[in-house]
Image (tube, rainbow, N blue to C red):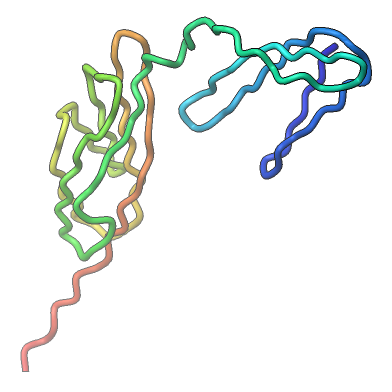
Length: 150
């Protein structure tokens, strides 16, 4: 017996009308991938019995890096210097920053100066021996207004 239930904002309930042992699987998704938890549930005489948790194999996502970063500014006038700080978990060994203005860096914590106004999407991709992950942020650069001398 298998049934897939999905709703982004609600907990799903499934009614089982016959006795037996059932495998219950919960899979959660986010921008970094997914993870699955599996357990057993026993139903006797139409009454739910508390599930017994069984060990699950290690998740293939467990050791993947999780790209995270902070930045010193999200908006400002050009030229705008922004310090990016890697906050990634799971011990990444390489970093690739795409600053959205046709420039990039492989430093862990780079500093980048935006010369022109615009909205730039910043991407950090981190990797280790288990895989890679990417996080996206943005920087909004506005024009510098130089007042006229009086």
